Image 1 (cartoon, one colour):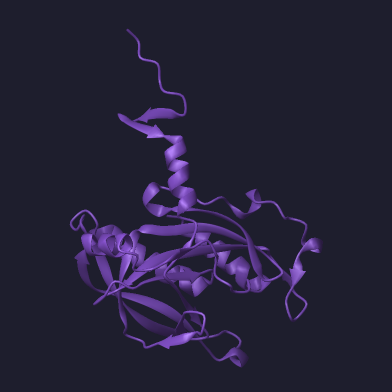
Image 2: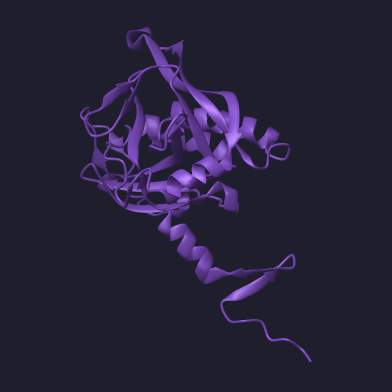
Length: 240
């Protein structure tokens, strides 16, 4: 007797895929967990008060919850998110598939330059090494996305040998001389892998409410038009 596939699901490689469950899991992850952590003008800052985090501070990086995709901004506020987990094989759309192509309708920055409303962004959930407090590192800058990209390459090479572990990273800072010397040296974040730890620790922290989940996106203004184009180009070149 032939079996009829359940509506809303499909067998993929012998594994039944439930599209409703997959979508629900993806949709429920579009949020910030714990305190917001960002890299701004050479400093790591956390929380609403932008408390500086010392360079060298270590965190456990939850690679299974790394989210990538696009955030749409209007009046300096996020209005839409299209994101998914790298661990699920999510492939972000290309910029030309998102709409909002009429540059005459774009907002402008302080210098009067057009500002793309769509910003390619990454969310990475972190946990303090000696505790259960959680943080979400968010970035849409070229430097931040490159930092997460380098971390992904390191993790990708080791994940089969360490299937039950997450990397422990130390927050570091690099710099380079801008081609326009008027801008001086440009600083960028570096996530240096210094150790590995059990994934179970992170699961316990999430289950124990180590960080409250909020549906709010990071309250940051999108990058200027040139910076946004560079970030989008870098992201597309290094698709996961």
